[in-house]
Image (cartoon, rainbow, N blue to C red; front, side, top):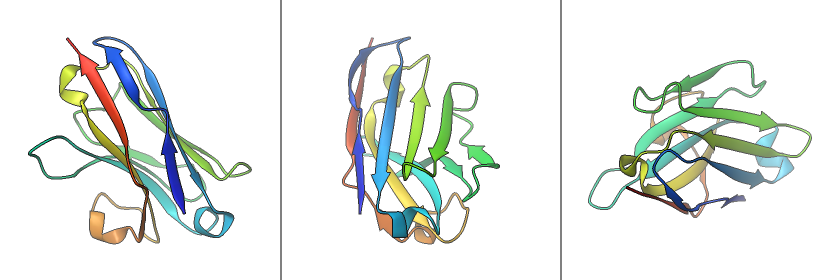
Amino acid sequence: ELVESGGGLVQAGGSLRLSCAASERTFSSYAMAWFRQAPGNEREFVAAIRLTGRYTYYADSVEGRFTISRDNAKNTVYLQMHSLKPEDTAVYFCAAGGRYSTYQLDYNYWGQGTQVTVSS
């Protein structure tokens, strides 16, 4: 029910925008978030946005560089990423859940992930 797109290869300092399209049933009832998982690492929280879009929260590592937003008319959530660093390289996952949270267990639905690679 969640389909990510927009990943790719970018040079350090560059930008990418990830999109996550959801079914109306999923999108209209849930908070949305982005997580990421680098090779050999645990999946980690990146950003979250409440149902209304009014409140957002970011991991310290991306604060000021990434922006999460949602378009409820299009059932889509976005992650705009600027000033990308090699350490941002990971598979990025979109998630939907009933609780606005940084914890994976609070999210019920997950996308398949999209690869972001930042070259130095």
